[in-house]
Image (cartoon, rainbow, N blue to C red; front, top):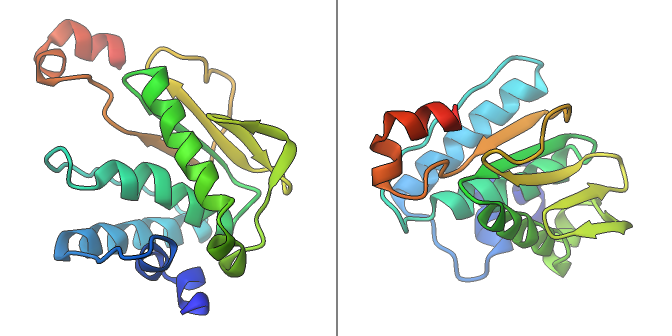
Length: 170
């Protein structure tokens, strides 16, 4: 199972989170992430949009667990995540960092976070990759990334339906 989790994102999800069981739609999301990731590994451009109702595991699978798996595979890759607030984006980074610190993760991957770089939403791996999170409008200008994730750029439906807010986020 350890080798499978290293190679396959869906297997990683089940191993890293004891008791987690993939539903059919979580499996579909994991497969899409696997496909997009493999394109990046081949040097191809890849974009993925996931839309689903709140509280169905999108952020957990896309913004917390996927970066942990991706950094396990390529600890030199920089990842940037954004959300409608800096607080939420930082929370995602904190949770991803905690996954990388789990003993089970260390059995799967050699990736480690530098001891001098352990902020909740901004940390660097020993191999030079890392995770940077920012709220919409936060400071990511000038920062490069291999993987960029935008999770919930609007706080609520009212903001999402406002042309002014959409333009500001864009």
